[in-house]
Image 1 (tube, rainbow, N blue to C red):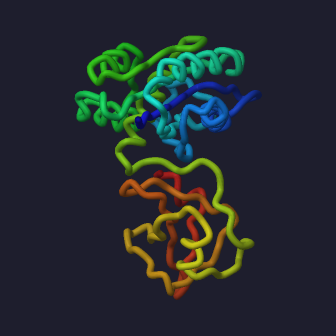
Image 2 (image 1 turned 135 degrees about the vertical axis):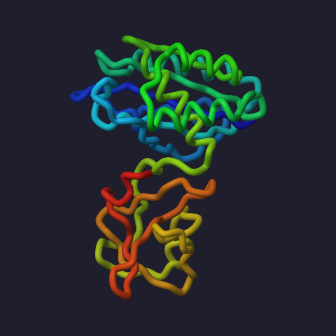
Length: 242
């Protein structure tokens, strides 16, 4: 069965990284033979002085296809992992949603996108999780990470939010590459301009320093922009909206 797993607030300025923790949970699932996982996405939430966060206020989410008989064990193991590895002073939260058991999907989506624009609290998060039949739990500190974790599930499920964690390794920065070759030598599904135009396989682009992909239309897409007659991969500043 398919489950969505999200975590938030596992690190401090000095120790840890929530993206690394999410990938360690992916490894745990693989090592225990529970199933297979997909890449982690990073979801940007509201930046506001009244919201405590380490650096960027983002949550991490990934999808796992697992055996039905190991879901409870997975939740317990993930919670134990957060409690034993999260940085001192962090406020880790865990959210696990079983795809076919989710209820009130509109409420879940509303919560996720509100978290990008509004200050939310734990009470609202718990009420939403109960309404939507989703597991939500605190694993240290104030537990405020449950807010971002629940939002991460919603935003990943939307198929239109988030950057995939890690870089796509292709050729060296500054080199030119055909779109068809990009698709053939990576897990990128499509190459698209920031205005929404899909590039054909015979078009070419110039690679930047960091090649990051985003989640759009339920696909892993590489975003590019035009400069003169040439296509270039987008930089971090251009991808902040994702």
